[in-house]
Length: 260
Image (cartoon, rainbow, N blue to C red; front, side, top):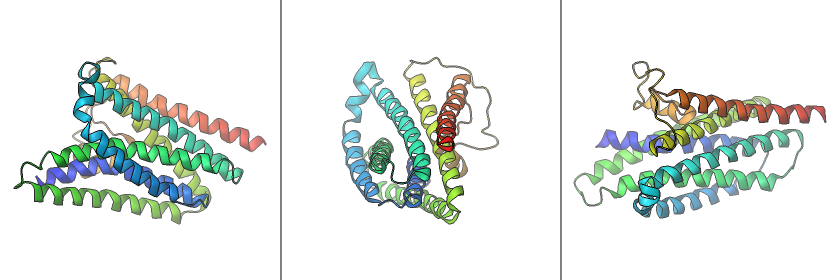
């Protein structure tokens, strides 16, 4: 149970932790106060518990696919929020103090929603062992180890971003926001396939021999890019299309700014 808990919690924590590291690096780049970060942690944690407590009822809604629909909606919403963050980050790099409060609010909202979604999964997983006291110590230790590994990796990534020159920090932050956002849209498509709202298809390839999804490296790639060992054609189209759309928006904004 120890190793299982490590992998379960690591999978849920990594994605949020890496998103936090990029947004905190952007906050430092623009010399903003990090108050939004602490508020997002508090709100996300509270909403995660509320969502987790009501997950059984939500799952039964909409003909038994309520959880898939809600999580897909959250993922799409975060994708849109990350586009807004990337655009405002780019604009603020060239025009200081442009809608900084709006940017902080959008970052707060994105992190709150991400913590709520991933935190609710951890909450449900851990509380399922309350009635099994012999297993609880190993489960809790594994959860702490998984969370520690996830946040240690994100802290390392944060300091790497902050150690670069500001121009490189800006560019890499926009790239990682794009990749993380595309992962969100990919997860939304997978959830909609599970809900039978999108067609199920045969996978295009199977890369599990090269990189297992359940390995630590696989979990890291999943958190960064939404790695899927057996993607379907639809999932590939959604993933690539999401990247193209976001990069197109960023490029258009950059072109417009450079002309002003």
